[in-house]
Amino acid sequence: MKQQNRKRKCERIAGFRGLPSWGAKINVPKILGMLVYGIPMGAFMRALISGFAALCVIASPALAQTTITSMSAGKIDDIDAPCRIPFEKLKDMKTGEPFPVSAAINENDKLPAHLRGRYIVGDFNSADESGMCKGVKEYLTRLDQLSEFPRLRKIAAERKIEFTSLAKENVATLTKAQESLDEFEALAFELDDLRNYLDQVQRFETDHIVKARVYNGYCVGQTLNFCEIQNGKPKLVYRFITSSSRWQQRPENKYYAPINVISTRNWSSDRRYTPADAKRDKRMGGGRSHIAMFENGGSPIEMPNFMHFLPDKGYVGERANGIHQIAGGLDSGGTFGAPVSLGCVRLSKYQAKLARWWTPQQAKFFIYLEAATYRNYGDAKTAQARGYINPPPVDTAGPRQYDTRSVGIFSLFR
Image (tube, rainbow, N blue to C red):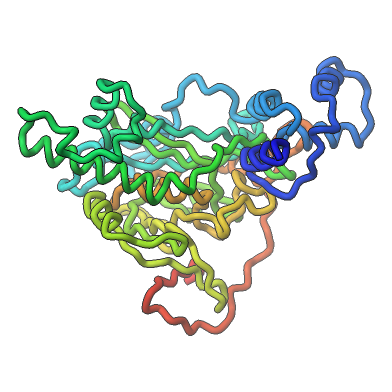
């Protein structure tokens, strides 16, 4: 039973299920030693090591994790660098210069300051400037460190108790007698948000994804970065693996606008939309219980937690895309992290729900890609990105009669 549980955990880390349980049969240190010291190996052994390094070894989870990390994103010295992309690398087509930090601020002036400072950066370059596939290691800020919870964080520290245990408390027991009504209400909001996260997001949590540079032949490296301006500086809150359009992209194609706005925040059918969710959505500037569906040539399929984004005012780009959970919530065929979607921006199940919970409506969404580093395939031996190979056209013809009373139908091919 323990080995079976380790197998499931490893499969979640790799982001792919249904692979053989080889770990108990492999002498991990010996094989890695052969690889390091250059002992000759046949094609089968090379393939075995390639598959081993891309996934994880059940017999030695810690060593497997180290191997995957070294082949993927590795140690990131500057964790906030993705959040500075709009202000350092992404060129505004209007000025030819990077965007000012002020461009990231939410234009809804009724939102609290910390929510207005939240924005998203899509780094869709799966390869780096040297042409190597980057790999991905997800990053998540601890719940108690989010800007939602300054008062609860202080109380938990003072009492030296587990942060999430505060969800069982009531405002009266947490409020000091001398505190103002405003402080009382602010603490009540924090408690509501904590309970809402625990009820509607945390129960879907899985292991964070770590993925090698080349996986099943795909060049992995695309990320969606959720950022916040804190004390005047861009800070990374979450980094998730993602997949964007499967067709070759260049900035001049204008398929993706460089700056977009989250226009609507939709729901998913695997959880009930409650009054607490409606209250949270109101504080986040908007949101709704509707389920967004992709028309799929007449056979609609759900796009859970669909956050529709539109080009910002004065910019050109596709208007029918969104950020959403991949169908089924799993890494389909090991392609996650490479450009394989029909145009939308995909996330895993937990990540999509967390993104929808954390992102305010009207948040800015920057998209950064370069023609030379937007790659879909890579060489497993060298991790070098290959030239882009466009897939065949997608046939979306079919009947278009839907019951749209409870769902929204989006088309990527209008």
